[in-house]
Image 1: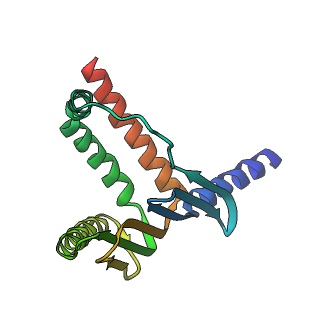
Image 2: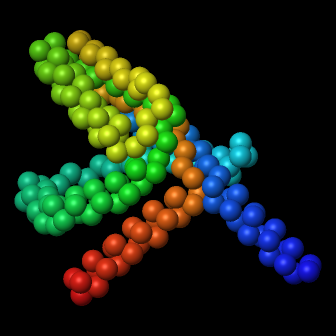
Length: 191
């Protein structure tokens, strides 16, 4: 009788954990001075993970035109297949996401008014396309805050992206297993 009670308790506990939401708060800052990503994960309002990643690289090496073109050729060789694979994986994850907050602010300036205006328009259209895909593929529960600030007499580019998403633990596990299965089948087919 005790064993049945323990098994039943563990079964209920696993069910509660699988139906629980994991909330992820992220902030990405990219500008000419710093590039950082800050990620915080919560489970029942308990902070499980808080990580800050500095993406700033100190590089002074310059590549010749020949080296640059060969690097681009290598990177673009399987580009279409990588985009298809990424689309499948992103769709599997995005279908299960709940977006609770999203704010995206960009400051751009080229030093000249006419090119700054064109750059700001291009950034607006890119942000609109990205948020359109996000709202079509996931569950958007908020009104996105999108800001593009043109800096007409400065040379500057900087962007800050803040979002809060949640996903059920069971759905995250299911999506991860499905992605692993898809990519392992494709690797076996290639080999």
